[in-house]
Amino acid sequence: MRIQKFEVVESTNDLARKYILEGNKEPAAFVAEHQTRGKGRLGRVWEDEPGKSLLVSFALPGSTYSNPPLLGLATAVFVGEYLDLLPVPWETKWPNDVLIEGKKVAGILPEGIWQDGLVGVVVGVGLNVNQDEFPDDTEATSIKHAFGQALPVEQPLMYLIYRMEQVYEQIVDFTEILATFKDKFKSMGKKLRVRSNDQVWEGTAVDIEEDGSLILNMEGKLVTLGWGEVTLR
Ligand code: BT5
Image 1: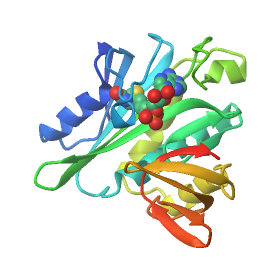
Image 2 (image 1 turned 180 degrees about the vertical axis):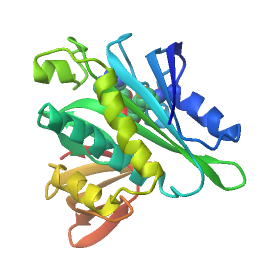
Image 3 (image 1 turned 60 degrees about the vertical axis):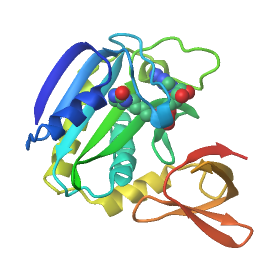
Image 4 (image 1 turned 90 degrees about the vertical axis):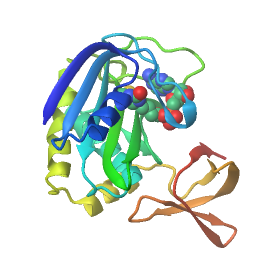
């Protein structure tokens, strides 16, 4: 995997997207110390303190990964696997967050890249590694806060590169990874409110399907949601 490091960029996801659209065939990782326009989903902003977090986007060229959201779920599990090595307890929040004690430590932004069909997938990861303070209004945390000690940002980066190379070589077992995602999804069986496609769905989370969709039981009626924003009811 090619690794390209930058001090300041607008968004590593945009660099990875450009790389794929230029026709590059090798997988690559774009890493920055700081982003001036870090992206979350739906136009939201990903904030960072320069040098204190891992900001990386993986560019996986090709049409093999036809389901970018599933790759996003898998990446949340890869972050969790790294946390297990420390160890720090973690949980998933469908579809794309990793939490420590209910607070967000990582956000993941998968994007399909299209040009007359799918030409690649970008998976961006923002992981709070060494931050000490967070604004009161965000439910955020860092690995340092949970683990009690600062860590080199390269450590989780190396672990994620190792897993992404396996994804690219198609030697990862998505069924097993999804089982871990579900096991770590503490809202399973609970009543949730999910905002998806400008609609709000309320029901009990009963399963996550093979393609990464969440299934809600709404008073006996099962609804499948491909993507959305979850809050506990
Ligand atoms: C995400 O969006 O969680 C996906 C974030 C992906 C960021 C990475 S960084 C490298 C790559 N390059 C990019 O430009 N992006 C990717 P979403 O689910 O929409 O959550 C965004 C929300 O998380 C914001 O609205 C805030 O409430 C919160 N947030 C922002 N910065 C945070 C941080 N550092 N830690 C925890 N929460 C944060």
